Amino acid sequence: MTEPARWTRDEAYAYCAAVARAHYENFPVASRIVPRGLRPHVCAIYAFARAADDFADEAAHDGRRLEQLDRWEAHLDRCLAGGADHPVFVALGDTIGRFELPAQLFRDLLDAFRQDCRTRRYASWDDLVDYCRRSANPVGRLVLRLFGHGDEDRARWSDAICTGLQLTNFWQDVAVDLRKDRIYIPAEDRQRFGVTEEDLRSGRLHEGLRALLLTLIGRTRRCFEEGRPLLGEVGGRLGLEVRLTWLGGNRILDRIERAGCDVFRARPTLTLSDKALLGARAVLGRWAGP
Image (cartoon, rainbow, N blue to C red; front, side, top):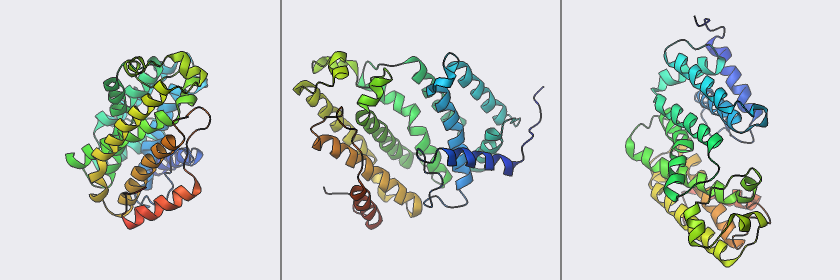
């Protein structure tokens, strides 16, 4: 029999907030962009995803990653049945109930984390986009629902932006992922442009690899363009966050292109001047131009 929860709701939310603060550099849950009343719920979602991500990626869980993810999903099952016995799920159960969040979005995230444990190469672009559908898109949909947007149009635009952002991270981190023996550039595209794994590992930026990366960047920009309508369809603090995300993703792609697609010598990042400019554009509603 499941032991009754020993955590009050307030204690559980405080636990999730502590998890978020410990990883602030990866997830700005304490940002003042998020309204105070929503921060505990964002923290609950983050704490769920943070633990699952650690199970899939941190060395401490070697040899038992899938087992840990299965246990985490068992916690989710008990939470959904009203028997939460872990602080993350005491808080998450309250958040799910208050905002009528679809359980499948959380299961999709867990499925993506399991895929991280099993898959280190992708055969096709469609395979990669399907991974993004489960690894990135659920987060955008959950945040929209926290802000009261449950319609399919906004969800679809959010999906496009989240997929674009995930893909941008892949092209930004080609060298980082290689050190983890992960290659997200689809094999069929590498073959078409004559790029081998040895080329990637050596960091040899020949014309075929540059052309391949430019092609992938072009596809990624199309994802952002598909999601562009969302920038004008959500307002307030969420609208500002969406615009910053969209602008930031596109600027990283600009950085990669301006570096001649050399993602091996230095990881493309946003400068302080980039952030200031993008912040001004997000506030003023300007998301076009160089």
